[in-house]
Amino acid sequence: MKITALGVNSAFATGCYQAAITVEKIHDIIKTVTAKNQSNNVAADLLKAEIAKASERVYIPKWHSNFLIEFDTIGKRVEKPYRLLVDAGADVRHSLQGVGLTSADLDGIYISHPHHDHIGGIEYIGITTLFNPDFTPAKNEWLGGQFIVDKLLLDHISWPQPPANAKPDLFIHRKVLESLKRAVGPGLDTVQGIPDVCLETYFDIHLIGKQEDGETKVKKFDDGPGSWTMKPLFAMHVLSSSEEMASYGISFEYSDGYTVVMPTDTQHMMPPQLVTHYRRAQRIYMDCETAVTPTGVHPHISDLIHRMSPDIQKKCLLYHYETTPDIPENMFYGILKAGDSHTYPV
Image 1 (cartoon, rainbow, N blue to C red):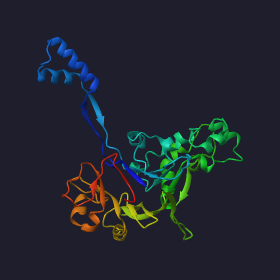
Image 2 (tube, rainbow, N blue to C red):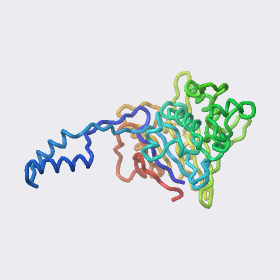
Image 3 (tube, rainbow, N blue to C red):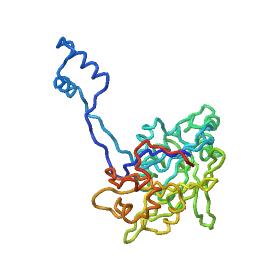
Image 4 (cartoon, rainbow, N blue to C red):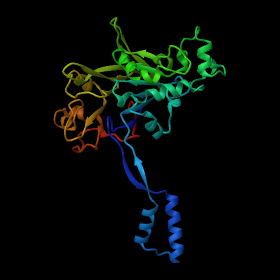
């Protein structure tokens, strides 16, 4: 299993503008200035001034929270690896582009909770995979050369929705599903000319976790000689005076017991039973706030430094909000940057 951090500056973080210039432009400037001065010993100040004039402002983004997990098994695209997106950021197009991927390269997505910085990319994934006739070989065969809208209209009685193997998986806790439907409904409930469009039109939905009948559903992903079992983890994220919002993180346990925990957005000390999962895990992907004033809805870096036990600290890969955290040396396993990846079990 390979985990890549697509975004580490979550929530409302933005990027910054910096002066930038291409290597080609610099080469041209050196040639031009050198030719004018008829010497190879061009003054550094002159070159600096010419480069500054040719520079442009470039936006350096900070992507929102999402991870890419790859399993060494065949996915819906009928090729390896199976790619699972964990949350979709406010707009996952950009962070996917950062690793050279698009929605066409995904097999599934997991949604932890319905805040915008975790579900904003759902509409992009749903729309682009729906209108991609080659999203899976099964979809291409089912369409038989027809446009998706014509296919759904003409075969509406026999195919009220595209078949499961023609659309990406969506893994989600049942308590998150209804909120997600309300949040993305305005953008996904209509397709020109097609009646009865809903979230199931775009995604093959798999409920995991505790069901209403008491059964607990998990998902197994084959990976090399073994398999990973994915389970949702309940954690309190926001607790107001009248409502609450849980965030269902996930744990991945390998056949040999090696466990990776991703709590997603949570309050570090609430609920305390998360500590049991932290102690059992070998690696923890921990979000943390770094602003001077804590919001109270995520673990703050000061909490993780002063209130987390050393044995748990050493398991934590931190991904952060706002500025990179300033931490004591050797206290945590590491700090994630966008694009960092790790392979498990190690």
